[in-house]
Image (cartoon, rainbow, N blue to C red; front, top):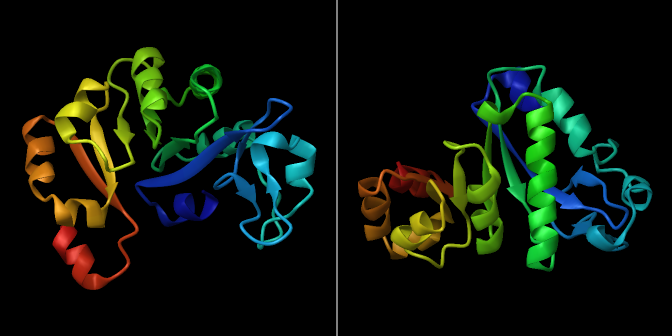
Length: 193
């Protein structure tokens, strides 16, 4: 996030998981770190997760720490991925907690949300302020279905859209945003453009 802010990037994406002791932390995926000796984030405490430094030597930040940093730069938006949390009830709690923290930091207009889980998207659409950008990630639903879920966009792995390019037009015709991820080769970037 600090590097994205320093470079003046449009946005910086992060993943939010809730630990077993109820702390929202910024960490990618269900395991930390993503190698041997990892702990399962959602069944570990904040202290257990933070006891394992990142490869940079930094400690996994809490959502509060991350939002405090985000507030320092008005140019770089946050794209918050709400991770799956096992049950619809747990996911509803996590969505409400994240939205409350974002509001407390005054960042509601500078945060977009993404999620793989349809229930998380439903809950974001239900509880987030009107006009909040919410995109579905999984790539298994047509844009019309995703719009009916309350989302404002699709954010699919580019290979999904290469197989179903008509979804791009469908989304645009519905007034939806189309984003893609894991585009690493120049020819794929050109195709996406």
